[in-house]
Image (tube, rainbow, N blue to C red; front, side, top):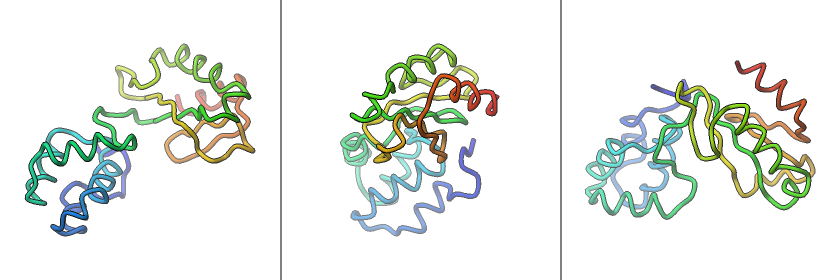
Length: 154
């Protein structure tokens, strides 16, 4: 299932970046952008393309927190937990989303519609607390605003 229509698929990412080892991270980023996560099949194809072992590719991917190894939901919700957001109630917003979506942070709903993640910082401290849904940021979040966002997505 392509989560981000119009983006490159695995084959396109591999062809676009070439076969040099220094392309590993950009290829991992492109594949995750296209599919939403890095599957075992994707790791294998990347390794074969770059003439690396799967262990080498997986080792690099697991070093960086930006890479995911489980599918995300159609609506991937990220709650900023940086200092400004934390002070302004991001923890309560995250807990509310966990209750409303019936998933724990780091998880994906059984129907695949929503996933929830806590992130360190978006760099939008003036808008704290911030929640990002896919690529759209929502600032100065409150319980009422979260309800409106969720209603619009459901």
